[in-house]
Length: 106
Image 1 (cartoon, rainbow, N blue to C red):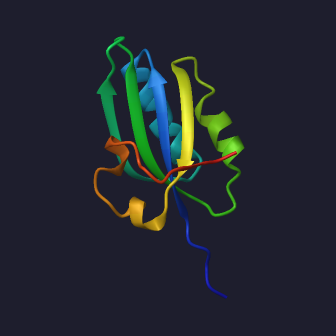
Image 2: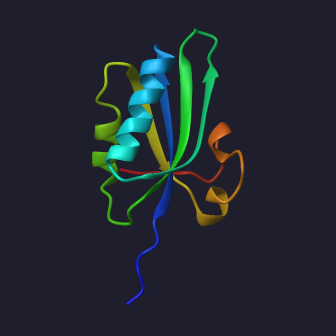
């Protein structure tokens, strides 16, 4: 029996505290056993930061639970998760742009 391949998801979070926001997201991703493929942070015009990460998650991971877990910290003001196609997850810089073929997960 072949092991199931992990799937790639794009996480986009907004935070007002860049250090707290990025540290908590990365630590939670590691604690939950997800792989970290890419990460970037940009400053928005309102002074908040946008953190984008590409994570490798288990095929059976409940995406609603994933979003709830990652957005539970007060530093995270907004969080969205979209599944990436296999082609998108292999492209460098995917986390730094808005992937065109995202499928928003429940």
